[in-house]
Image (cartoon, rainbow, N blue to C red; front, side, top):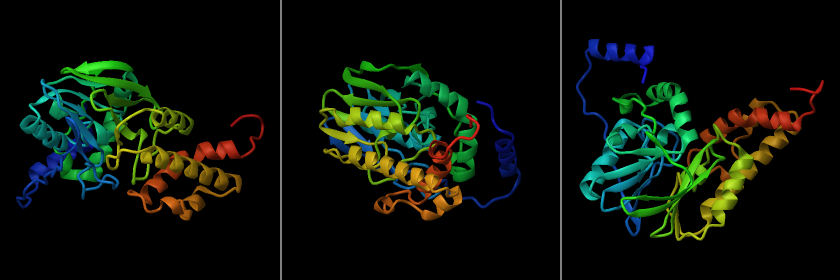
Length: 314
């Protein structure tokens, strides 16, 4: 992992400048067993910020005789280390980890699990490697000392869709897309628990930096038709009904309708931003910040779709 010039300068400054001694911030986990041998460490519903140390994604752990199967490893090395400590102390260690997709809050803790296999879809691994430096620089700017020691480590082994057994625990892996170009979801065969990654959000606004809304809707149709006993979304609480599928789809549709209408009226991006989140979803965690980011990220595609093309090309 190449260290950026900015990170080098920050490190040098920290070594040379006298600063008051203070305790490093700590991650305080609240693991909860949601099904037989299935644990959830729920993330904050906010955007990544110093107040939460980047610990915003849900982390699931499945017990096996060989240690836990850890689904997503957190947003910093120190977050991963706190998760690893729980697995070592309570679940007999770690058998393997899986990364659901390439957004950094889900895998920047991989370094704490480097002595065990870390699996992800092939396209996720490629995206992790391609984006590691930029993502790392961004998080160092936001999180500061929370990122101490974090050097992004991409998943070390590729996994495909289909049945997978780790430590004697059977999993059904689904290779989907929509939130990103490669989204892993899985079902724990023992309990029927769906671990959906960021294809599902509940009570937290979805994020859109790499979204393909048509593919995302198709993935939601698949997830909504599964006979599962409970669901761990990528962000939000465990639940035993279809709330996350319904809410995520409704948000995607409402957001797309808002963007299409604004573009059709000839509004500028600034005017669409000023309108704020759709009223029915303004209360969700991470709004209005997530709506503002999504508008910037998705505006161009909706503008091209809504407006006539002059001269036959864009």
